[in-house]
Length: 260
Image (cartoon, rainbow, N blue to C red; front, side):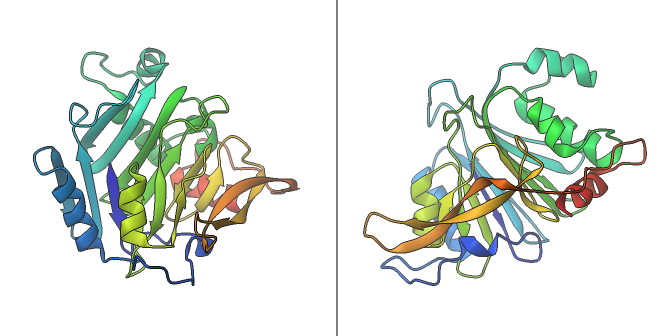
């Protein structure tokens, strides 16, 4: 899967940008998208949005992976690219009152996002924590222009692969293929941190430890050159305020309060 968001849609953490130039120069979003299609000419599909966003995916049969599914779904102008599996999909379908025959993991994630955005009484980290399995996903809300991405920790293992970086024009690039991100972003790329979620308005946050801040750790590549940072939960610093909970809570309010 591949997601590209220009700066007016989402801003990557500053630490992800590497000032060191390498042999591979960052590319512009249209070049990265063309390279993705060129790598999978018969199996890749994509959609672009006028606000500066693009989503792409490769069918699961083209890139089989043990226990992983690749999905691309849209509902009510909300779109999701999903990689992995949800072990508790059936119980979540009942929880959200959905039709089990037509609901897959990507649609469930869209419904969870929509519930949080419109009427959810729970903070975002609690809802994502309810998703059990190995997964990585990106949601784009075309109505509001919001981006939401997350990657599971998979019980202490790395889980579904996900990487992100910064393109030549500053766009955020998120993809499960490390080579796509590395070729497209040069030195400004890193693994997307496990157990974390990213929102275009609230930034990066751990959903496993929502009261702890994240700290950036410099990365050194195989050539010994500094490149984009990775992010770890800082066990010594905590966020003082609690997320607001109640009937008046919406997606943005819950996120903003948690980020204070």
